[in-house]
Length: 431
Ligand code: SF4
Image (cartoon, rainbow, N blue to C red; front, top):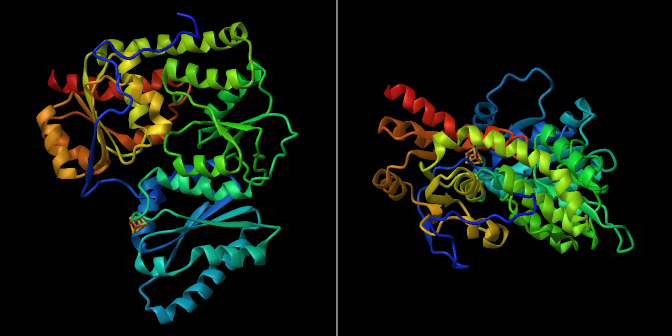
């Protein structure tokens, strides 16, 4: 198969309707809040600092989600706001100013400081937008001060990254209509994956490529009417809107998971830059073939196995598409916290028609469906994995898929392996 062949839905029935049925549920949900994104964002943006304005619960969440000893100076912290009435809020603003003062005097290398909102009522009363403006005037020229919300009331898990990147878009310098077309890749990627993609774009002859977020936040890429962008992550709805309002155009593509998703994603960029098709095939074919060979190692273990995704990271749809089209798995239910049909249209079209799609969560009803379906593998949050394992159902922690490098050709085999491992463990335990 050549690199420009098109992907077709599994023969179990392709999604022929443009608007598949979706089960919408609004009840108790078991998902991390948007503060979790700080764990991967602080590693990526090496001259930024995340100051969570929150409670002890927020501090505990960050500390346990980080789950590692910090040997260097940390790049995130929590300013704990204790219970106060409205009269005490002015002191709160002063206290926040004092904390930021102390931090920036001690850490002059910080170039961007994010004030991150959370959900305790004291924090909601505090206007972090105004605080960022006020502090921005004071430290302007030296440290950019921005704010966004990672509150569990407003955001789930990966939406924290969306909110963070959205806050950066107004800061990006304007590119004029006279400037040459440039490509932006949007969404935090591990450095190793970013470097691999950069090499592929260079080989394709696309020279003006920037990543958001970049390793150094001091140099934000330009955006304007000649900017086109590829989403590396499916959960960036607000960032997409903000970039489009600045004139940039989104390139429609599958997300870069697996051999076919990555090929399709690169092809969208190649077409936008008029890259010759033969040259595209020549550049992409070796990586694509390596990815297919790596994926094939897991095929025996995964083919025909039934899988359910509980709503967690918003990666569920593209991952289910990858497993169905490239490994022959059968997605029974694919749940997602929010479904952006436009960003996921290509993914939806490739899911088997029999797959149940759900948006939002009512956790008890969802667990009832898992028990009735008894899939071979359930991808879910940490809190649900243990009870399901106790009932004899194999699980995969959704958070691992967010923390592991899974994008692109070179990671395709590891991505397949992440799903094969729990099934192998189950088989060993049964023996
Ligand atoms: Fe909990 Fe809200 Fe803090 Fe998240 S932001 S840790 S949900 S209190």
